[in-house]
Length: 274
Image (cartoon, rainbow, N blue to C red):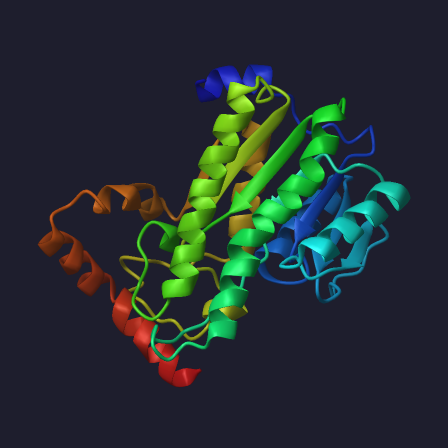
């Protein structure tokens, strides 16, 4: 479906019916900025995270939850449904990163990265999707992956693998909804940002010419506008759109791009800092 057609078929956000959005990890970074934008537009925002958001608003509800635990996600969903309402937008945003070599990384760090960055997408979507299918509102499931899901640097194997898995998760979910004719009611959006100016990658200093840093405010606005326009993919900055092509290049060209971007060196430098 073309973007022009999608704009006619998919309505703008309707805030008059008490729209509820659940954002995992809305206590900081991109998630916090998204929460602010949706609150301004009249949404009730639920922060599903281990920690409460520092941002305070009457329409921001903190629900303490470790999204890597399916039992906790189910309990949180029950509380949200009974006390707030059935969410019609889910943003799987929570993420963690561990800079280290594969042989030095602890099993706990590997499991936490995969659990938070990938398994949590299954847990939250599985838990909230049923209510979305029964809802009479326009629904969205947003998958926040990363540019590193297409091209992973050295010393970030668990993070890159989890984000590549998130891309595959989004693709399968989108295909399932389309195959069962639920896609006109439940839209999906894949978000693949490059490096953001967040705490997670503050020690990474890649080549700014090849990979400029994007502010979390700019990224949040891009995601928000992508949903308003009925887009399927939000990739920023511009170079991220071409990263899937790198996987098709001869190895020597791919290695040159890695060297020119400084991605492996900057990740190695971050290991020494951590």
